[in-house]
Length: 145
Image (tube, rainbow, N blue to C red):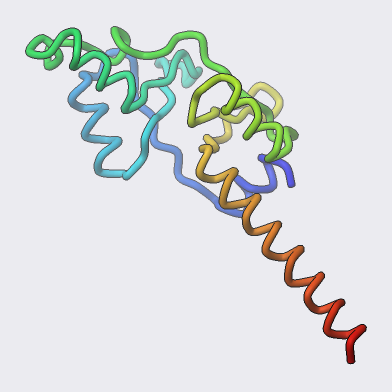
């Protein structure tokens, strides 16, 4: 299965923020939408970074009281690792694992189309393994009968 297939099936509403948003506003968006990271988009809609719970926690440990004065642009990861809609779920999982990240923005023909998380990839892989086990069980039952 490709990342594009997964996103199409899921039909997700992608939550994003802007570089000039406050860190508090970004944290509120993540908390209220129960997400761990989100793309940061400029005024033209281009993805210019990612901000995550990890970024905010790290900033809290170094900036503490000043955290309320910081903007998303101050904390976001600017070198964004991405994938395409044609990337397989396994490849996306491997990219996140080797890069030690949990979210990948997805692009199709240079257009931002969504985000896939490590949890999404795990759930998809588990579903495929369960289906495979069910088929093998059915074959075994049919041969025994």
